[in-house]
Image (cartoon, rainbow, N blue to C red; front, side, top):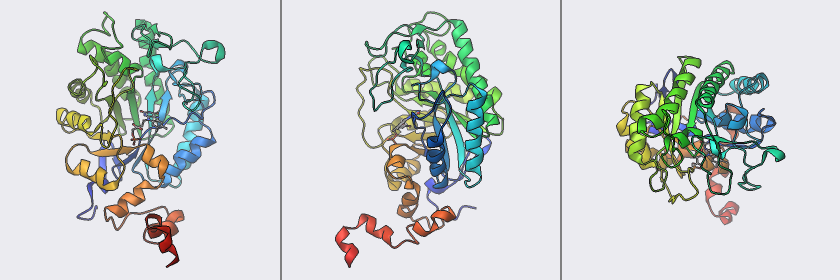
Length: 380
Ligand SMILES: Cc1cc2nc3c(=O)[nH]c(=O)nc-3n(C[C@H](O)[C@H](O)[C@H](O)COP(=O)(O)O)c2cc1C
């Protein structure tokens, strides 16, 4: 039972068949640490720490459903037994100490695949250097510099839809609670959805319904291969921030179709489709998109994400009815135990931390107050 007066951020929520203990989500974050698509010790410590810190849900990074669907050669994949076995051992390990729900983002990077790690540079990697030829809805380069992708044939589309279904089956066997389908940030499913990157004239291009077709096929394939008592959601784009691209109204229309398809949650992000986008990043910069989508698909829980930094800010979004959950990326990298601070900020008195951390909470550690006080006070 949630005590009366508990802030919304710390109330549980139901997504499909699973109950998330609170509404703070660790957003998927590429680690560029996999080898041949297999997760490594880096992933164990990163996901392990997040799961031990009290977040309700941790969503593992964009994971390629086929080799050419990875963003970079260092991104994880889920198309073979070794990748599945390592993922399973990670999940099993985390379960021994954490009640956090664990999700995975299944992805295909489309025309933005085969790139280098961001700290080396956003370069396309040629096949001679360990990269590969990319695939997309139409042969249009992302930025005029990277090669145009091969235009996907209907057989390619069928293979990719099946690959999403197969990866969902592997996710299920690996013990994950939730799948998030990646349909934003300019990757393959988003490329099909946006009229800026999709110029096809077949059943997968042209009209709104045709551009949404592959997304709905992927949802059906994932749903059919993931346990019914778990959750399947999707991260969509609220805006392309570019003329002629996806608008919040398009996102709302898509949300209606996704609700009909039985999606368990919607996660609303934006951008990344074109190099000409004019994006304005600031506090809550994507929250209005989440709100638009939430109004269009009532009853489907919606996650908001993007420059949400304080507990009060997160709680206000929920109180205003703009979203049902809050996802954080950079705030968690900056402060892995962000959720403790938010609990303190919002006056949650019964927030349970892992016993191994119990001596360092805002309540038990006198030093906590000094963190935000001028250092001179420390001597007093
Ligand atoms: C290091 C890093 C890696 C990311 N990788 C992914 C990813 O794998 N999938 C995805 O959908 N978004 C990814 N994102 C975007 C975040 O999930 C999030 O939407 C974005 O950073 C805005 O939220 P924030 O302001 O809380 O950081 C990544 C962001 C960061 C900082």
